[in-house]
Length: 131
Image: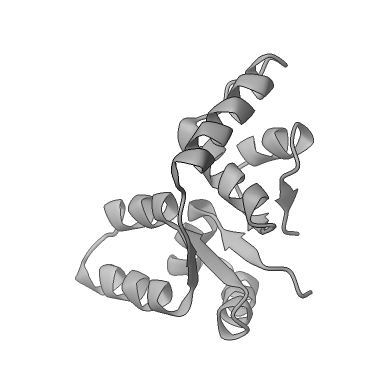
């Protein structure tokens, strides 16, 4: 279990809501081992949805521990191309999901998510999902 892992918004929501004890343990292990990664769009989604100052502080504490991956213009262009290719196969994906997937692909990160849209992206790209 040496994967570097990009943790999606859907996972963080469950983590902070303490819905799954096994998830809390798994995230803690990833954070402690330095294998947890974040990118700007995931941080934006999480901070935007924070329920109060306590949750904001917890988010910032988690962000301080994680390694961050930036999405530059090339990443955005590649995410757009990925969306185009998947749309030609009959699936329309959100721009946010495409950007998250492209960040994971470009940086050889597995994506930990509960969002089923990423199953479609993984079936039609090089995206690897963390199980």
